Length: 467
Image (cartoon, rainbow, N blue to C red):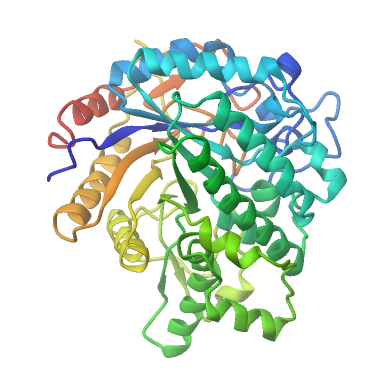
């Protein structure tokens, strides 16, 4: 396998899932801060403000806010070329709509980026990763066009402040989750109807396009990507009805990158809007904004493949279960019911590269598992090594055999963190174990798993040594 010489190996986190310090240094509340914990069988509950005596996983998380130097040193020990992280918008503009930014928040991320720079680690920064300022609820969040201006003020602030420190940006994490979990994707109530979701998505498309333009103006070195939740599905059978149902499902997801990579809505989506009565809140000049603000690269998460067919519409798909009414009998599953399918990663890489012909980046991939700490403190996570090895091999095949242009790979939760979907800590992804449980109790000490040393070897060999 031959990975490009400057391939960006690394790992990924999100502010709300690792930082903690949820009201420190002037930070405002975000949508993540009113989500209680859950598990694979119990959905996370959203509360009206913070309820006294209740446990909110984001409030402490793994205390990365106070321990980032220790954590980044561990990333550097593994040889990370890049660290994908997010800036919590509510640290910079606590309510989301202020005229002036919070200097303490800006200074914190200066320190984080300086630490990355010290080790030669390139930051890859998500601007909005499931952490919309809660204050924007007063406007109806992303259903209100005014939020575009608030987001752009935030973007211009950080593009200017971190010029020369950050060159790679992502606008909205897993933007297509607006169709699956609108609270995470944009601060919309879970019961939001399709009109509200499509209005919010439209405003995010415009905001992203304007952010791309502004990023390039502020620093021509900036590269701005979109980030897609790597939902990909196979038809349940060769019955044409199953093929059609699968195509319908994939189109409901793929129209997001269609807009952001091509600069316009696909005709199939516009026809669907006509049939269903969805009206986009278009204003003069919007089409030009979308066309001028296409992304420089497409990044995505990839964990599993789905199976879709005639039963899918009635299955109640959501971000916690991804239930489509079918399971794949040819694949094993994780304890959380996610199908393990390395070939699916090669499949989606080809799907995207054939469709858009722009550089790609896998910015989330990994295996959430229960990890056991042995009596001597070691953590033998061979299952994680096996999973990652097979997925890296699939990426190598996409590059070598298929000619896909792949920029980099950041495993999800390179250090154990809170699960966005369930709020659990015991669903662990990291190379680094963090001693904290589902109630936020523990020493918070960090320790290296077996996979830490394995990934260090992978990076040092640029993907050649996967043994």
